[in-house]
Image (cartoon, rainbow, N blue to C red; front, side):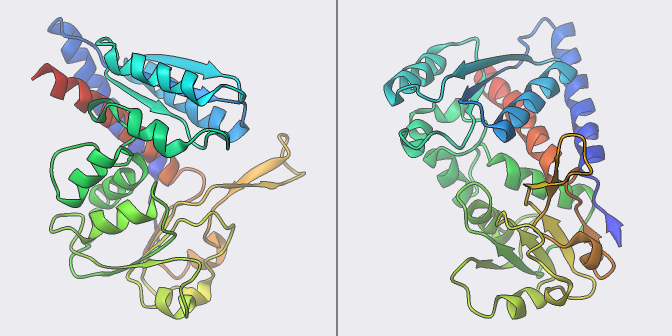
Length: 292
């Protein structure tokens, strides 16, 4: 079994981006500026946003964090999105999800300028992804593909099973891994809560990707010997032995699955850091596209 160290790979990517930023500075060019909008005080969302701001600082990007109370109106948030669309100093921005129930997430996502949509959630960017046209790929699926590529994992002709059909991970990832490219050319099965004989389907997977948010859902009996395991899940579970009182757990029973597989991502330190690295890559790309 070989561990896919997302933390180490994301660090490599950040160093590559840092070098590009230094080169831009030396040439007197604009430095990428990323804005994150955070609504409310959900602990996980705050942690994610803080990690993104920290990554900007380490790479040399400009970054701005805009915070709203959970009670913010949809119209106020839309007005902020429109203002960022018009601000030429801002190269890319994200609205951290999930949003409070009184706000329509799709309406907010659709309001973002596709050329500044560095999370890759706008319908135009998703459409470009479907047709393999230039655009921004969703950050988490993009990070997973980058892990596969940098680990030189073979994908052509492989049977890939993805558990979870969210618009953020499972759905776009199924398209990306099915495209005629590398990583890609997989035969993809997109499984979900209504899938029958799920364990049997997973057992046939050469590449198994778990993205359902259910701790330790994927058991050893569901995994084929030598399979590649990508664990996207990150659920906080109580742990009195930890000072903070909780720990992060993935969708895969790591302890029992890891001896069976060929490659596996840990939680934490696997897919999570790559999501942030992908966001940084998209932000630099947004500036470069604007500069052409």
